[in-house]
Amino acid sequence: MQDFVARDFMEHKGYLVDFVGHSAFCLEAHKGGLLHESDLNQLNLYPNGYGLHLTTTRAVNRSAARVDIKLEQAVPDAAARALTLAKPLVDVPFAANLTLACIELGLLHESAVAPLVAQGPDCGLELLSSCNDSLGSLLAKQQRYSRVTEDDADGNVVLETSIAGQTFRIESTGMSVFYLKLPETIEGDFVEVNVLLFKTLDALSHYGVPFHTPASWMGKDGVYTYSLGEVYAELKERIQSYSREELFDYLIDLDCDEATFETYALGMEGEGPHDEETVDRACDLLLEIAELENHFSSRLDYSEGSTDAHHKVEMQAMRSQVQELIDNGSAYSRLLLALADALETCIDLSDHHFFIGGQQFEGSESDGIGLFETILVVVEDRMSTLFDEAEQGFNCHAENCAEIYTALPLESREVVAQTTVPIIKRTQQCLAHLRQIQLSLEVTPNA
Image (tube, rainbow, N blue to C red; front, side, top):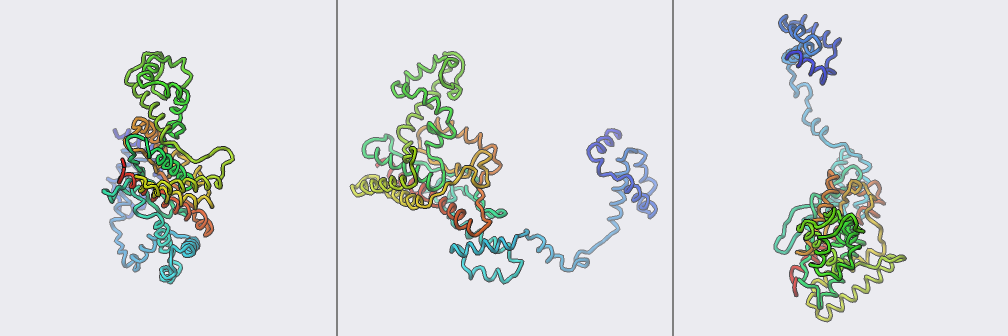
């Protein structure tokens, strides 16, 4: 057992033993009376170095026991020094420049900064803290929560902000989901309103921040249902002409090896007949994609040659259409007012639009999931099987991310003014409009 313990120590911690130095130390300790003859027996029991380690440890412990240092006498200002040393190292010129940027943008007032500057070179941390609060206030508290209804004033905080290095970091700690409570059937007066609703959501995701609409999350070209969308494209004509029973009968006897599409997306392989439960689920997925494609995929015109100027004209026409419906006494006037506000914001943003995303900034997007992908619009009580499929895809991507965040640059006053602050404001505007749209539908869901 002794040999095993000694060998194990030397194999994993042998680097701790300095044979020359520790031997000299133990010899001096023996001469000085800190080690007795019995203490040296460890050298005979473990001659390979472990014994020297045990003997040295004993000598060190006995030496330490004879030393009594009173910290308050040795270092009179120890408490003050500890507070100073505990402060994070701050790049004061960076903090000063960021403070000036916040003042120029009207986020900080000089009167709030003056007492901090009076502290001299040690004011860096306090300046950064003030800047952090000022930039963070652009993303209002009520927009940091997960789904909030009129009956649920407080939810879970899912967006956190902080200054990290020379970046302003927005981190997602959960999904921001906005559920749209639509009429049970898309018909009558609501058909036109429904098209305007989803085209407005698309405009918001393009000119605000790139959150997920139902189409981008789980549609035919959805990020997390792309393979399923390819199957749908192959079977689209059958799906449009078949009843559910006919689609089921077609799939249950399908020879997957002879199919012109990748049947693995439906959970099917080999020759038929297939498992009925699997085929049932495949029917649900395909029919739900068809429902989404037919009712919840309206977008702006992105045909070749389209520009922000074209989109601006299109959105202005949409706003006029919304106003006409309101003037005609539509039962969905509250929703239409919310759409009008959102379109107004998008029209304003189109004049100075710049793209966000595509690993443009430091963040988790390169690991699989970007910050804005955690903002999701869902049609409530519809397409649940398709949603579950997309959610599995999302979770697989999210597993690669230790944290989901984006880090907006703060390295210069120009960058703060032209990039970082506009993106924070766009995030705030987008979340506010999504909440307004959601709440307007909860008040009159089936008007």
